[in-house]
Image (cartoon, rainbow, N blue to C red; front, side, top):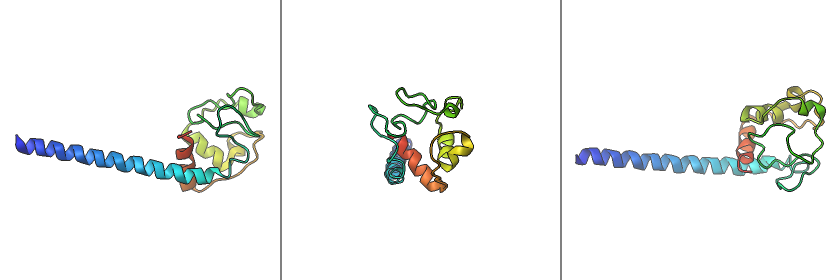
Length: 126
């Protein structure tokens, strides 16, 4: 019985350490993503009460494209039917004009996979 309890306690401790490590990794990735986001902040707001030249990115992960009120989206984006999944965000930041031909957003390629991961981790925190 003692051996079983010891194994259970050991397993629980390992799960706790892994969870703490994953949270630390996510926080580090989001912090790196905040640096990558500096390329985007000239046009995009992280304030939910206002849009800038581009729409606010608060809550963008999982949101339907062209769905924020008070922003004049391109017809191409309105008709795209896209939801901003991690995969679609990755494609968008790599080559938005390829994903949605006719979009008005100026193409700013972030082709580095690690930078894409960091940026998406950061966007998930907004």
